[in-house]
Length: 614
Image (cartoon, rainbow, N blue to C red):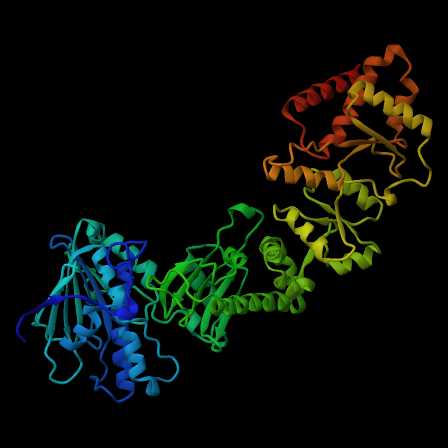
């Protein structure tokens, strides 16, 4: 054909406000668009062959070839797919935003049936090339018998040139003459990074060539494909062994630790979704938990952690989700149809709940062993999604100080009460734990950062349930039937207030245990108010003082001894020493001493040991 020049036209029904360098937020995305176009070209030709619409050479090997040439300043993407005629270039390239994918599917919809997995051949995605190129050239030869190869060339401003191409092989070669913004991608390592990011599972083999490498090692004849065309999520779960799931996890997420367990998703109606969600060991560092759920469309990477599709609490997990029907806009990074993705989100949540319920019911011992790792994720999900809690309520378990795992109903029936005592630090609160165990009381361990809002949430929806930290009060079961003598109680209170300071809260209890001289208490209400105050930086409510109460045990031999010597002037120094030591010992079991008080405590302890040695 004679050389042709013309102006690019915009399809009036698909006008896009952004075409060139501002089309996408990430400059490396151009390689995804060009490779996915190449994959479409191959997929189209294969489907044409399956439908009897094209004759394909027997045993032909389909592939995409990406190459960088730093000296020439070019990036090329080549396929041996369906190719284009000059008229198709005019239709699909010159009319910006005209979808060749939609055109193909509409034309062959009766023959394609289900699974017409065309990603979107050319259209706006092609123009992402101009994010890194000053000039783009297409050389293409259609599969049609007798077709003439065509060349298209444009600087991406508004004009183009078209003429015959010397290309002899069916398919398309896109050549990017890089500009200043594209120089980084001439580096082989940088290009490989982009290909691994976006094209690791493209459904056509990809080979990469670096013209600067003269060793021959990166020539196609010496290479394996750089991608996996059949990712594990495409296989039926029945054909996947545990070793397959673990290997896929290690390969995709570069995590050396094995996942705890996983869910294989496979949905065909009312939308198509396949994928694998992995439960890694989350441990207790809730703020540092960072999951990675990779979203794909027809094996092309879209983005990590798209919360519109994936429920927010599931973003703590790791996994791959392939949603061919995902309604994305031009950049494939933002969703257009909230109603549609809501169904997908609900489906994923239900499958996660089903898996957890199944493990809890059928593999309880294994489920118990997972609990310490996965409970922050589950509790976060419960807080974020009431329906999720409704689905897994009976699979929410609590580890007790006795090492058992029980449900909330099990706790209530076992204790005959609705007050659930809990421990946040077994070592710090060891004194209280011992008191509970010695007196046959139970408590659960809630030691993650999510537990504070979690217990408040449970109290909201579970009628009559109340959580109290183990040092919030003195349960009746710890108290002796004999009440503390009122006169002695008043005397002890006055003594400790005099020595420790008048603003300290002091109470006297007669405990069953004679070994414990005192415990420190902070009411659950005060603790939560203090936590809330700190969380919001005292904004709007003023600083909240979490003032503890020193509960003296009148049954303790040491406390009784204080009463005997309190009126002896010559024992005043000893009296003060012991009172302060009792106070600090109780405080240490409640929470760490401030630095100055810890120094004084150590100095006082050494002094007491010295007195014993005299």
